[in-house]
Image (cartoon, rainbow, N blue to C red; front, side, top):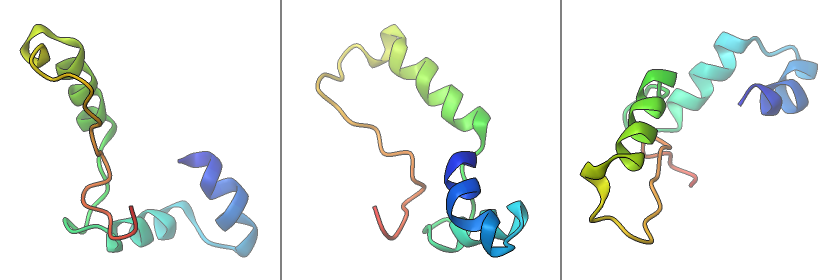
Length: 67
């Protein structure tokens, strides 16, 4: 995500906090996913608890309106 910020927004004078607020505004939950939440999903998907899931994509966009 930081790469997208550096390429598209930083040059326009947008701060990291403003970028995160923009992303939050485009999701149904009105917040961005934390690194801990992403890591927890990765651990779950790699565990035996997810053994019944095959050929599955996990959407971690917090319900982003443009995904």
